[in-house]
Image (cartoon, rainbow, N blue to C red; front, side, top):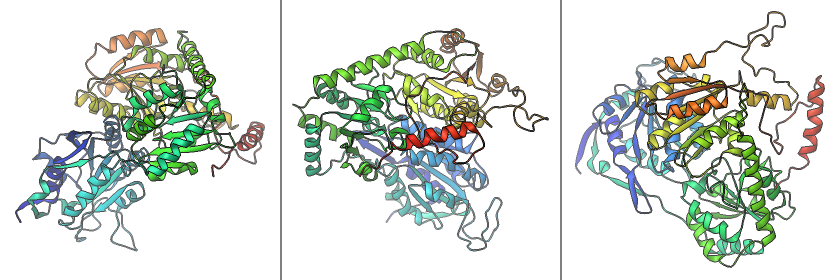
Length: 619
């Protein structure tokens, strides 16, 4: 057997360079490079290996959490067919990745993490940044990744890499099992040499198959659809990841089955398709909520039915409602006691389209869906209409950006009140135009995610909508965008604090407590003094961004025009009236204190108990 003498780190990078994926006959390298911050736990190992492999691009980032967000956003835009590696040193560098790694797994997005680790020899212990345990020497902070990783391994001997790396790629490329994968490599092992088999470094193609469920289950599903009077589809992210949007459009245009979209699934249909009811769930449109309430059959496509999407198990009130779940993941396809069609959304929809060639909903039901689509568009137009209030109205800001953006452009957001308004209002015209991280709703994703989206789609303008709360948590990847000459346009909406949770606090009777950025009051000893004088524009400029300050939507529109002429990352600043909100149309289960001295809390509890009565189990 021919061998090649390499360090473990060198072998890892060379192996990763030679991994390819193929779907529908199209091949591409699975890894587009590596993001990282070097420390004593990886600089002499992975760092040295990257240095001598310049054809595997390396990107220096500013925060380890941010780099995992970048990688996840990149993979999301690439439909999970390509991703980036993330490397960190041991200790805080590694644990900084945990939050974003959890988000990747929750959202079923492939990201490979290679954190450095303590010395496998244990001779140098405790090494700098090492967690010690009195009960075991076989533990480090990297064990924290175990519950949030779809695959986790620690390489204590060089030859372990030979069997570990194929498992790493198997999980990352699996549509059903993908998420964050952690390959923990002790710093001494990274630099250790070994004679690896040459065959290990040959080009390997991982074929992403399009699986079909059992024919008996398909036949039952077809019969259920034919027997239904008021069916509806909930389109989740899997619809887009499988490239099933065209067949979905063909199917629903012919049959008249209405479609509501989750956050990840928004863009499954263009906003003006007659069968598109818009957003589903807590941030749903009136039409989606009404149709869901009376539906006798719910066809979930690539959705995991989070409570935010299904309105805490109270959306579907028809006592005879049934579920058919089309999902590549068996775990998700069985949810709500559904008839499970475990497989690829595109090929399953193609099969259903042929089998349902003579099926259509009633003319009355079709017309109702089309009327709901049109009436919602009228509502959105009213929200988007220019008012030029100072401070500005968030719905109008969304309208300005949405109207200005082209079909190929991408909007990115993740947390606060913006996602709910975007979910309801944004007029999608491309499957990749709406990029929301809402499985984890992670504050700080926005700017890093915008950079990842831009790296994956350089031909698109990327508009990052972010509140001041998320901006303060993680804005430093602006520097990375400047470094890599990747232009993103950040629209920073200043709410003087946490607007979304402030509104929720009001709704549960807590009067917005702790949600404003204010000085501590010397008299009350509470955070109810004057507003903090934070200069976000100056901060962004100090990081290298081109900054435009605006005071109303008219100026914002002018800034968007100017931004198109700037060749580097831009931040447009605007103040927002946090008390003026896009209305919501349904209830979300957020538990209310059962004992309180506050009358507002007591009133909220009464309402809460009434709403709880609508919840049900789908057995």
